[in-house]
Image (cartoon, each protein chain N blue to C red):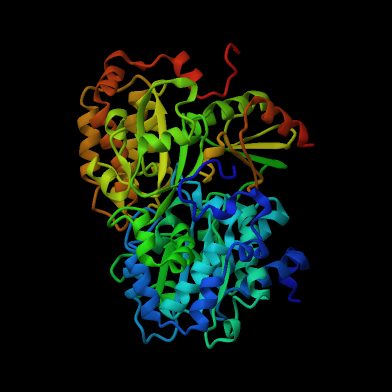
Amino acid sequence: MALIDTINPLLTTGWSKGDAGWSLKDYEARGGYAQLKRILSSKMSQDEVIAEVKKSALRGRGGAGFPAGLKWSFMPKAAPEKYVVCNTDEGEPGTFKDRDLLRYDPHSTIEGMIIAAYAVGAKRGYNYIHGEIFDIYQRFEEALDQARAAGYLGERILGSDFSFDLFAHHGWGAYICGEETGLLESIEGKKGQPRYKPPFPANFGLYGKPTTINNTETFAAIPFIMGMGGEAYLNLGKPNNGGTKLFSVSGHVNRPGNYEVPMGTPFAKLLEMAGGMRGGRKLKAVIPGGSSAPVLPAEVMMDCTMDYDSIAKAGSMLGSGAVIVMDETVCMVKALERLSYFYFEESCGQCTPCREGSGWLYRVVHRIEHGEGRPEDLDLLNRVTDNMMGKTICALADAAAFPVRSFIKHFKSEFEYHIEHKKCLVSPEVQRAGSGFFKAGAA
Amino acid sequence: MNKQYDMLSPEALGKIDREVAKYPADQKQSAVMAALVIAQDEKGWLPKETIAVVAGYLGMPPMAAYEVASFYNMYDLHPVGKYKLTVCTNLPCALSGGVHAADYVKEKLGIDFNETTPDGKFTLKEGECMGACGDAPVLLVNNKRMCSFMLPEAIDKLLAECK
């Protein structure tokens, strides 16, 4: 779906022509690669580029929200072989922004990666693209060919001393590869099982070499930051939450899709941009940052603004900016069952608390949903999450635990009703109507 | 050409060579994910012998390639129908009919998840997030073709198209 609505478009500037505006000449026509040219021709220093990104308060758009400029500054200066890697393994349920970024404007990510490579001194880079979006991977390869032919990639870029080449690598169906060290293992041609940290990728990354790894949206923002200056970018958002952000709005809204808004935009405004609630129904709950983020009840969410700090204060995470909207037709037990199945299915099996714990969570939520819950099950679920959180190599165990804890915390009576009455509080007919799959009145 | 690689066509080997060229000369193993996809596209699925051939071509132990083939969900280690349909049933899709879409396909084809129709035409799989939640319900045809907004009429049309 192409662009529907936006406030302060940066990342989505090129989206208005849909599939007809992605190629190199379109990108150049809207000022693309001008920043790379300026950096190279003015011989800007690496430190100057990093300082500009730091000033912008650009925080990692993949989920963790770590300041991008700071991450770049961790790269050792002297190392002879370094890499830049882009994480487009977009598998966090609810998130579909990077797909559209690469579909409608792949060159902004490419230019951002080239500038990053210049700043950290990398000669080679990879973009790891989610296997399920193979047509996007093919388009990205085509965009790389265009950039190479125009002299933006390869040896001595635009006649400078700087050389960098970039390649696309596709995944093939493993959520865990969205974790940065799992992704690096995957590029190395192995199972995508995360590594112990430290050492962090800036010291020991791809092929054991220093590596800067950022999310697609983070790289795509770089040309705009270099163009308007870090301070102007920061001022688009709010302190500590610089710039604009893409929000993927899914679920029970009239117009699901990606919306670019300045950090700090009220949730109510975002909901309005997405066309409001489907069928005019009542908002029940929102997962504001991808399925790993704790769920928030409607009344809490309606008071939030869309930025890292506001959502954190409300007890959840901005994460990847995936806003999953649920209305009153949703059974929260069934919703949680779907999520718990996902984490059980996608645990890489490396750490016992996650491998076993995610199975326990799914089986117990499943039995509650199917009328076989026991009164002690809610305590059991919380105890299992206690044994998972913070006890594993990567954050997948926490990601499996957060939904369970938050669904039970905010919607406990619904779980208790299920256990006591062995059925949903929300009738099956109401649930069935909620999805919009069946035409009104159809059997 | 080494005889043992006859199992894959010259076109497939050429495609694998192009993947290998993306990585440093001493990191051929990095091409294994793409190479297994190329082999799967040619063979329809990935028998152990094919995995071993890919491993040999990339100079890695067969077990290391098998570990990759068995770790990532979209490699088919068993034969599948001519059309493998993978329906996303994760929460964001389910809110917009993902589970209902899967039920509808099951009823139309008379098979459950992980089953193949008796004529060998369709295999149905349950998928996890494909990163297209705004287009729900979504399903993949043979891993590479994504179909969006799969309401009943769209499903009927797709099934009729699959000859």
